[in-house]
Image 1 (tube, helix red, strand yellow):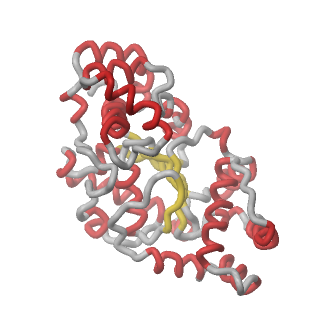
Image 2: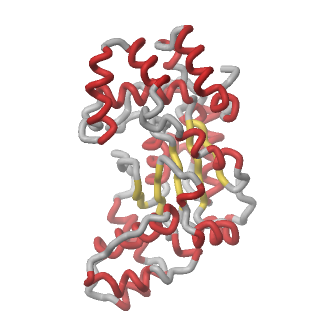
Image 3: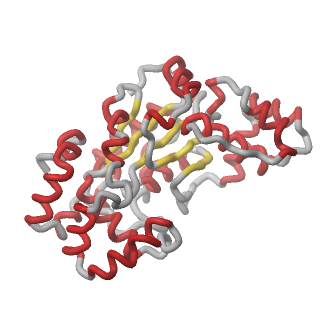
Length: 312
C-alpha cells in the first residue's frame, strides 16, 4: 500500500487492474458508489448510487478541466470527457490514439496535463491485463514520483477463475459477440460436459487470459499497489465473511481517501451485474475432479503458490 497522505490520495484518480471473472464489476460498484466515473475494459455496473451526470459534473469542476472548458467553450462535455479518459488510457497503456482533425488543438492541450492530473480526481480506468511494459515512460516516471494514479489489483483463486471463464464463454448472452466467445463457444459446447471443458481449458495454451496471473505478477509484489482478493470482498452472500469484507473495503477506501461509510459501500455489493453467474468463493470444488487438480498443479502450481492459494 502506498505510504502517502490522504490529501494527495484524494487528488488522484485510480487505475484498476482486475483479472477477468474475479469481481471486476463488484469493485467497479465500489468506485461508482464513491463517485468515480469509469472507463476501460469492464462493463459499467448497473447499480451506481451516484448518477453518471453528477460524476461528470464533478470532473468538470476540476481546475484543469475547467480551464479546458474555458478555452474551448464550444466543446461539449460528452466530447471532452472521453478525450480525457482516452488520454489517461493512452499514457498508462502505451496506446496511440488518432483523433479527428477538429480535435487536434484540444488534444494537444490535454496532452500537456501534468502527472497529477493525468488521471483526474474521480476518474478510474479499468483494465484486465497490465504488464509493466504496456505503460508509457511518462506514466511510470510520474507514478514513481507522485504515486498517482492510485493502482488497485484485484484477483481470485485461479481455479475458480477458470471455471467462471468457461461458463462465461459457453453460456453468457453478454459474451456472445466477444472475440474469445466467437472462437471458444463452439469448442466448449461441442465438448459437452464440464469435465471435458475444464480439461481442455487447463491444457489449451491459448485459452483466454490463461497467462494473465503471470503477466500481472509484478503488481502482486509491488509495495505501491493495493491488492484485493475476490474472496475477501464477496461477504456472506458469496461464501465469505462480513467482517473480512468490511475490512477489505475499508482498506480500499483509505487507500483512495474515499469518505463514504463502509456500510453504504458494502450494502448489496455482491451480485446483480450482467455477467454475474454464481460467484461463490469455493464453487470450483464442485467441478474439479482429482485429475483436474493434478493437471492444474502441473500447469499453474507457481501461480497458486505466488497468489497464496496453494494450500486451499
